[in-house]
Length: 359
Image (cartoon, rainbow, N blue to C red; front, top):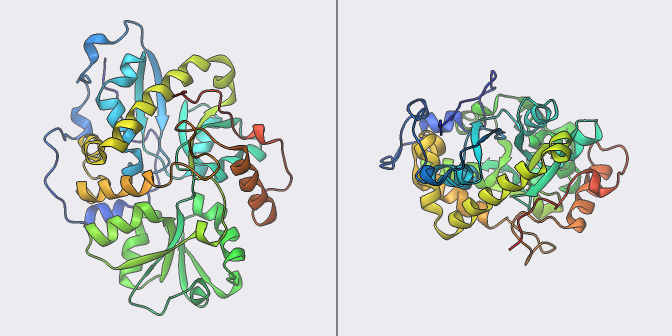
């Protein structure tokens, strides 16, 4: 199998942690770690058992590769996608809204997209559906320095708040503002590339920014010896599902066996990552050495924080990736009341559990 491991196939706005990646001190790479450019022509470990006929499938991440992408890379590196007959191409992304559009216009086959952002895209006519719930408790948060005068969300009024147009956080932020009692007109919103967030925060240009706490806090506090905290939006009633796997509705109708095979191999990656997060972190850095600022400890903690958010109280005890109707109802309700969703739709407009592997 040709290891078709690609960087983004379009001009990507640098994502949330590129600056952090360049600034953070790196630990020693895994023995398996190589530059993505050198992997072409190599084969996963189990290639001898691969089917003769392979189906090419392109996967688009939501941002640059981070800890919660490690299970995908572990399954890839172990050859589990190849065993399923899939020749995977993986590309980094530039935000959930952009990835949703790429799957909607069939530029890629499968994408990782924040579920609330996916719902908004679907309501606007983008032909996608969430086929697996990965991060089911929203990891969105407002991250701030501990050396200032911010102790509660209302303290953000009068402060400079970094936002990245097109990100999942931008789509859902009005919900947090309302529920946390923050007057939007009293906050100075500054548009930035996601790559500028960390340096802008640490330099004092901004006082806070929105991102995944499980992603950014390890980068700053471990990788950069910083001191930041976060207001986790879920703690303030932002009951929206986090990142999911999306597919084009045409692919769902015409090629369900591909999606089923993908999720079965992906679930193997998650199960192995839950058992040994560091092994998965090393697999991620083997293909994306700059992940976590080049620091395996950062990637490992990102993944460990993610593992805590794989289920809600409604999906607990169900198979990995299974989504509860109640959680989708809560997500739609939040978007209707506070977000940009103008009208309710049947919940199966947004998601399906038909492809979730059964235990």
